[in-house]
Picture 1 (cartoon, rainbow, N blue to C red):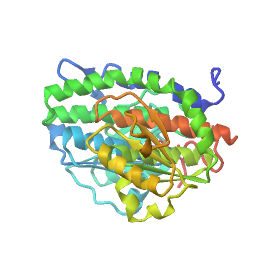
Picture 2: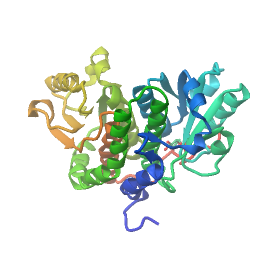
Picture 3: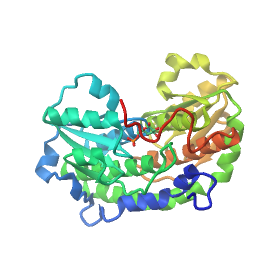
Picture 4: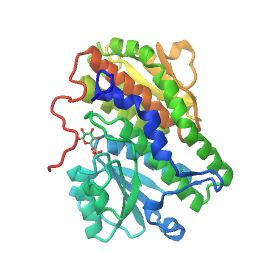
Length: 363
Ligand code: BG6
């Protein structure tokens, strides 16, 4: 049951502090500034041997894999890419011995992801799972992996599993980083950042009422644009996905720097933009993009850490700052609340959106 919440979706959004605590539990090693993930079944020599990481998943699992690829590249400096598992399995993929494959799935039963894992194994590749459901088909098929321990997710739209997956990737990236060249000081910084996440997620959840008011306004538009750069880009993609899944408001995500190469033509008073703006070295670039949108009379809702000059954004959702590498995990949470409250305002079937299934176990 929904334990007093109006829907499973908001129950699961609210459960994220404890879901993240469980994903982290017993895995953060502050003494050696690393992460312990016994289920990976890789010793340090094997973990060093991979030259590339390829992450596979569907829907929100794929977008959380994009956050994971970003974390692995940043902390471990191993080239990493995410790809939809469905595309991968149908294109006769080249399987390389020095690539580590990682399959992401909340349910562990998504057929396209399972088929991708089977294809990798058939060709002799090494594949790990980042999976929520213990003993599921994908978990059993993989050579090892990380369980999320996020607890059951009932609502079709994924929220706590998405966030816990990103946290699991931060642990994997920290572990791989520390068998490569990530310094103990940086390792300790990430350990402290990980431990701060649950409390900071609670602070973001406390802004629900403020976000609900904005959602009710923005839901009146036929569509929305979501933009982000580098660390903000996977967050923007998942934000757009969440909005379209549960509210049926059309949403498009673009890398902020790509806007002027085409989609800027869409911008006007009738198409507002959500700008995901981490407080990193790209913040000025993001403000420039927001300025370009405002110059075309597009309304901007900024999700970030520091209030900009009001000329850049009509509306702002400000959230606490963690470490730059981990901030994307936090920036996704207000976008979940935005999608949820847009769906509520439009009286949608929040937990069971039309045409969708929680787990697609057929081709
Ligand atoms: C989709 C669901 O069909 O499957 C999404 O509607 C989900 O919410 C995706 O992200 C992948 O599911 P799983 O269980 O493999 O993470």
